[in-house]
Length: 335
Length: 126
Image (cartoon, rainbow over the protein chains, first blue to last red):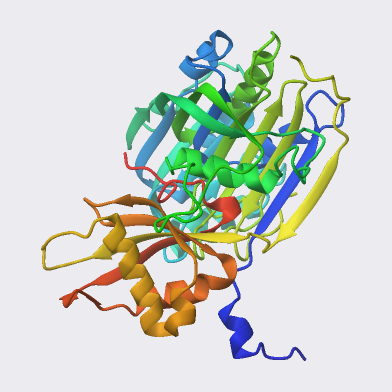
């Protein structure tokens, strides 16, 4: 039997949240960085920051130009996503992702399609058109509880010929969309000093992973990094030790972005350090949908106070990396 | 001068449970009378007085940073030490007046240090 928390202690409590910090080397044969990206299916925003860089690097130009389209299909019945024509045309020929658009996870029905669906395994050999299982699922979704949503869809085609999502859903209101890309250059930016081997930071020598993560939030939200400790409004300042870089390149991609594209971007960011560069590190931040039903793999995700499920890479010049994965209350720990 | 080369980092993983030092609140002040909007200093003063009203002088001494403020929309990102989150949130929720004008704070999002790098809501409009 657990003791009730005394009222005064309750006053100091916060919602439970998790931050997983990993460090490793990107070229290590057993590095799990790509698996972490693949396991996080639904991303709505990908941002990267490169210190000592003023324009989009050449090595990234083609990846940014080809982030890939995604689609919005209005009023789509869920049972159409378990139809065999759909499974044969898309699920079996690549990685297909779908997520209901504009549904709030804590008050609306929500549906999602992962490439490796477990709840209803569309690729199960027992799930053929005449099987009892298939008929039961179709009945449940068509008649017992017919559900219709607006869906965001994306498909990573493994090269097989066949129909496209646009032609398959032509009778629904399907619209192809391109992710939005915004870029900017910051001047005279205070950046924390980091040492790849020191995840916790070293006093007077380098900052910790938590300090870096907080600083990154300040940069993305255009928070002043230079307040005095006596300031009435804000005392936040860049963690110490830090250096001032003359310029830093920021790029944000907003849309329905699939893990395969993020892995490509990560690879190209590694290639950035293929030639000598002034920067010691760069960052890649990926935000999941706040109302996604899952965070990593099939772990249930909830909104609670903020709906956070995001991860951030720090890639060092020597291809060491730090990876921070953050989830909120009631979410399982990322793998 | 180039720093000395370091060997590749060994793998390390650590999980921090509810360890964020600060929490971040995205808030919006509603002033339905459409009158003059407070500037950032007046906004901060309002937050301090809300804390004083509910939690006394000890509450008013709680360090709260106004990290961003947009006067046009009266929205802000506040940062508070994690142990002060409940005091700040409750004080903002129960504040009803600004200079004798009816007002209300809407707390739109609350995030721990690790998660606050997201924009207001990580969805987007199409």
